[in-house]
Image 1 (cartoon, helix red, strand yellow):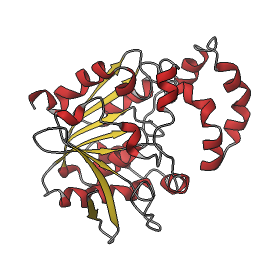
Image 2 (cartoon, helix red, strand yellow; image 1 turned 135 degrees about the vertical axis):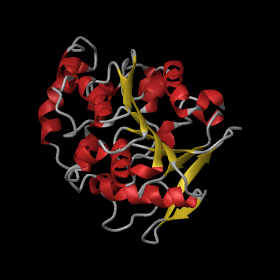
Image 3 (cartoon, rainbow, N blue to C red; image 1 turned 90 degrees about the vertical axis):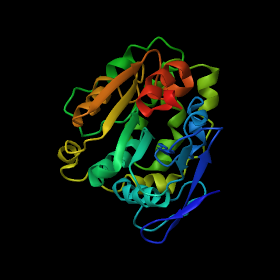
Image 4 (cartoon, rainbow, N blue to C red; image 1 turned 60 degrees about the vertical axis):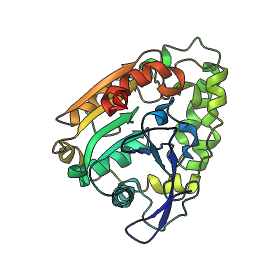
Length: 281
C-alpha cells in the first residue's frame, strides 16, 4: 500500500484505485467520521476514468494514530502533504460526509492549491444559516417499518455523548441515510470498519473562526452533491453549502440518500463526471 510522510513525520497510507484510468489523480476523503474508506468502493466505477487516491486518515485503516493532530481542521495539513507527495500542482478533491469537513478546512487554508472540489452529502453544521429540514424528512417516512424502533430510541440518541454510544445506536439511525432502506442499503452499512477513538479525536476541535468567510476567497470550482431523501442531514442546508463559494454549484440526486453512488450510480456519475473532467478521460 502506498504511503506518504506528513508535515510532522507521520507516515500515512492511501489506496490507489486505478482501473485503467488515465490523467491526474483524484484525491478522495472518506467520512464516518473515521470510517474505513472501503465503504466508498470505487465510487460507482469512477476509478476507470480517474485514478483515485483514497486517504486513510490518521487512526484509520493502515494509518497510525498521531497524537493531538487528529481533529478535522488539522487533517487538512495531511492533504497538503499528500499534494506535495503527488508532485505538487493543484488538486482535484472529492470528499464524502464528515470528510467534507477536512476538505473545507483544506480549501480555506490552501485555496491556491484547489482546482476542483466535489463535496458529496456534506453535513452543513454551523456553516450555513438555512432552516434544517431533516426532521420533516424523517417524519415524512413515519409509515416505514424501521420508524417505530427509531422513534423509541430518540431519547437515547439525543443523550449519547461519546463515539461508542453513538455507534451502539447506529443501526437505528442508519435508515435515515438511505432513500430506500432495502437489502442493498443494509448490506452496505456493514462495509468499512469504524475507528471510534479516531472519530472522537476528529470532532475534538470546534469550527475554526472565520471558516465560512475564508471559503468565500476560494476560487476553485465547487460541486455539492445532495441526496434528495437524505434525512440524516437534510437537503436545503446541504444545497446552501455551495453558496459559501463564489464558484459553487449544487446538484440533487433524486431518490437517493447519503450514499448516492450506491443507490443511484448512473445519476451520481452523470453529476460528477462532467465536473471532474471524467467524461473526457
